[in-house]
Image (cartoon, rainbow, N blue to C red; front, side, top):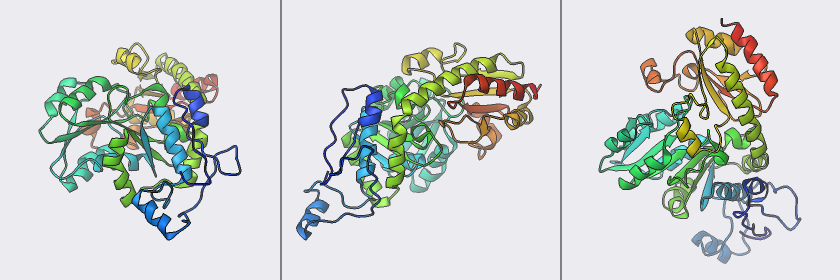
Length: 402
């Protein structure tokens, strides 16, 4: 980094809780406690010769905030150390990260294999955007390893999945899928947003790249949009760096600063959210208006064993179905007084959404059913409120659906 910033010492040997507070911190000559916010578009050079060397990559330092920025660099370094990645690049949103990761690797004639259970915008990129550039795709049941293997073609370049899936909380075997991708000469990209970096480490399981919507748990307080891509230095240099630099899906320094502040409390918030999710899931399972509850660490989850092997905890989200379809689901959501209706997740405030009419509304009903999304399904994102208050709120709302 260029003066007046000091170098950030590595914290990789420390525990996640410590890395979340200290990793990547750079200090100016003023020795500020909080990370500095560099709201600047460009940077000044000491001479024309230095500017030339900077653009050639011969002089370390910043050029333009579309390329890099000290505050953004701190966020990227902290995320890399938390994830155990060699490198990270931040983007303006989670979907900017997903799109950059795919387009950065692909060209006309290439082929993508992806799990069909995906966030609606990810399905749009794969099914509708990539074909405009001559990239084909095959969607598979992500839980069936044989389908991943059968979908491979000579031109297959990328595997893409999320686990747990949105909103059905299916668990995909990342390690096994990574082996299939490697044998096919393809890279594996994992959207790890539901698990967070604290609960699942896709790179250690064999993935080549991990993407996040940092908007979710990393900010976690409903303030700013952000995304981040994490991988090896080679992957970032070969596929991501130039794409981001030339096309500009850049994160603002302010948003990067907000993400740094969010990371400091990430572990505390996620621990409380998980505890609340577990208690709410158990309470929902005992109510007569609920047809089924989906939570990865419950014994009745179809992939519970895999979830416990692959994740450190079951996560902050609970999906459940109420009897009576859409009308009953709407009645429950509308009756809640603490949990608010929103399609966001990972927030300190508990949130609920009806996937069929929000995050996945653009799909035909048959396609939604193929992803396991039914009209009575609701997705609950646990906040940090009192679990007792949340459970009482759900009880009164569910009673209205009987």
